[in-house]
Length: 543
Image 1 (cartoon, rainbow, N blue to C red):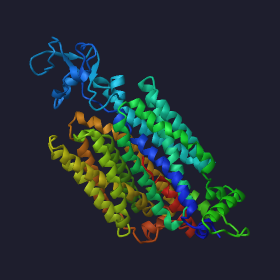
Image 2 (image 1 turned 30 degrees about the vertical axis):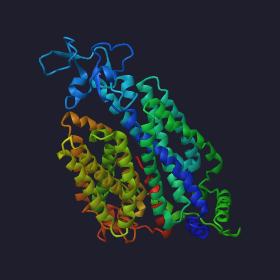
Image 3 (image 1 turned 180 degrees about the vertical axis):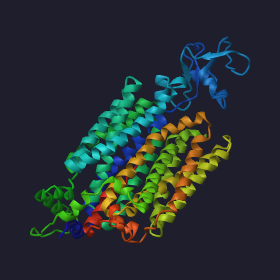
């Protein structure tokens, strides 16, 4: 009897698994907090050069008139050389660079990293770089802690990264300068990846095969809940340091995970610690009301022959043969485009002209129906679902460029529809990728797709630089990338209600030559299910 059969006997999603998923999903809320808090902490309020000192005790918002900045952002970085008091760059007054710093509007934010360290004008690129470095931390954390979790176990990596996340997150709130700030944000990013990926895998490894898809979706719902909660917390706390502290300090409460978070029995078996695994399985069985006999014989998850065969495969097998190369490159692009557009929309909500807190709330609420609708469409068609949601997201984003800034409500509604499509598409690509890649290279394919997705996350904040070419350039790219992905999806196979491919020959057909890698190893059903489970480890937001 193998491990999957044991999980079925003790209950694939009983009381034990439900309690486990509570512990697994709570960090997902903090993932949303840390991923999206820069929308508020790194916001750029309206600002003007300090050409003269305001009256004693007078707030900047009352002394400086920020209303005339609309449509003329150049006024934020220049000052009339004659110091006439009227900033009128186009009215014949010679203008120069700000010499005495800037005054910022406090109408929306009491303070941000931008207002504290003057990350505007010539230093504006530093602010954009801060978000990209955080996303780079997510990438490094995924690579580093993914392998460490396989070597040392899921539980220890989760506990270690929860501690790093809490300490680094609180440290960010007390950063003395911008460079310490981005270094600590990088650490938060690496720890967020370590927690979410390891926690997700831990949950999947304790869940029955039939319940894994639903279980994976539960974590996404908690991310959406964090998305919504952040809007309310940021609305109440307008100072960036206090906001950062508010979302980070509760992380120390996760110390109780030391006593409640179980190890992965599947990992223990794979590492020849069967007695320890048996104790956990017996505990889970009793909690689920399905106790097992002590003399039940357990077998390793993989048999030795299959495990050896799988290890012989290489990343080059993803692109060595024609069909596999075409499908791999398309899937990699879909990962990249989905995450690029998802985070560009999420991090630049101030561009849509509505109240930033209301927009954040709406974008968070959109996550819920987008995730729910995929439950009904995926069973009918993976290909059509991916194609349609990409097309919806891309078209809506592209339409925003034709809406004048005065019609901010319409522009936000279109952006919301775009976010809906991309969120649904992003949830689909997880499962679609698992079914496109054959078992013998599935883990490599998913790993490379995850890497492409995180590269998209790193580049998403940098898309703001395209505004120097045209204010509409970022949204044009947000529209074209999904539309191109929608067209490329036509070249992918339909995988709904079809058996998973086991070998490259299953993808290429019987005419695959031996020199192209057309070796057909025997792959057991246990390995196929476990490959599906391991591939699901990337099914968490990046992102």
